[in-house]
Amino acid sequence: MTMDLDNALGGGTTEYFSWASQDCTFKIDGMAESVTSFLIDPQSIRTGFGRLASGEAPDWVWAETPGMKIKQPSDEHKPAFGVYVYLTKESGSTATGSREWNSNGRAAREAIKGVWKEIDAQRKANEGKWASVDVSDIKKERFGQSPVINIPVLTLTGWVDNPESDSGSDEEF
Image (cartoon, rainbow, N blue to C red):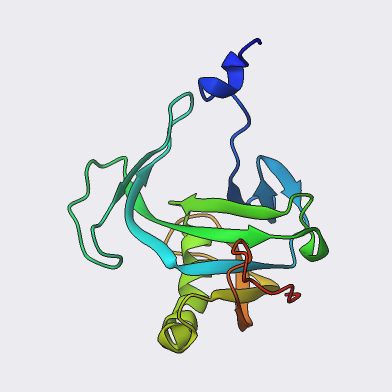
């Protein structure tokens, strides 16, 4: 039997979710997608700092408790968040399944901040469930002297069972 060293040594495809503000689109595994909705696992939220540099692996430094202030590791590290999302073909993704959404981009951070208060307020009443969010709009905003950024407006539309558990339902979102 031959061993697939590419996969065994982590050389396979990286699975992730991101927001490309300049392109005004979500990317799934590096490919632009027309995502209209997705699920967020509120139990997976992380906050801290991230450094992204060309040709280097991302450097994420997470607080022990989400929202807890920690020391900025370096000037190159920017405020960041991380959360797991779940995507389906019905919501505009070519992939179905969970992806990590880690970002230190201002537009992505503002998108999460825009919906997080509502998610957090309902989280205890929906323990173990995932928040269903729609991408309801894209707003243009400028912060200080920086260029205008495109922020996806996320709207909480409900709660569903964990889509990856055996007891999860087949609810559409």
